[in-house]
Amino acid sequence: MTRTRVDFSAAVENEMEMTLPALSVNEGMARAAVAAFCAQLNPTAVELADLKCAVSEAVTNCIVHAYRESAGDIRLNVKLCEGRLVQVEIRDRGCGIPDVRQAREPLFTTDAQGERSGMGFTVMESFCDSVKVHSRVGKGTTVTLLKRLHR
Ligand SMILES: Nc1ncnc2c1ncn2[C@@H]1O[C@H](COP(=O)(O)OP(=O)(O)OP(=O)(O)O)[C@@H](O)[C@H]1O
Ligand SMILES: [Mg+2]
Image 1 (spheres, rainbow, N blue to C red):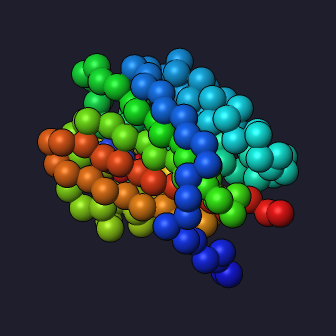
Image 2 (image 1 turned 180 degrees about the horizontal axis):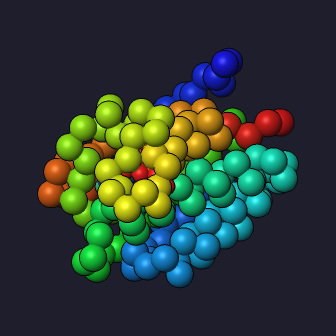
């Protein structure tokens, strides 16, 4: 698969940040907020749908895995950079991921109930140009999604 080259030094032209409690009712809100903010770049319907889907997977992971039964916040940061590059950072201060490489493998899940398919990270990767995961056990996880929109 051909990937767009991502320039991490791209200048930030606009930025949005929001913090939401990690509740499943807020998953739709997070997804819609990111889409509404990115609308100023006139993305295609497909680009917007891809971005929403990736954000949804990352946010759902914070709700389902990071905090489990306890309460916590999800911090979303969206940067619109020169060259139509969108960066979305999704951060939690939950349990963290002991082995990120393993977690990113298709079909890997720690869900014992059989409700999860272990495809969240794979979905994020397929809809974005780059997915970075930084995690520390007991401290939390930051997922950074990068997507370049077409001209
Ligand atoms: N924010 C997070 N905090 C703690 N653990 C996480 C977080 N995100 C992912 N994980 C761990 O990584 C595993 C893989 O995540 P992934 O999203 O790929 O699959 P899943 O959530 O288990 O299933 P699916 O997304 O298909 O419903 C999870 O099962 C979980 O153990
Ligand atoms: Mg998931």
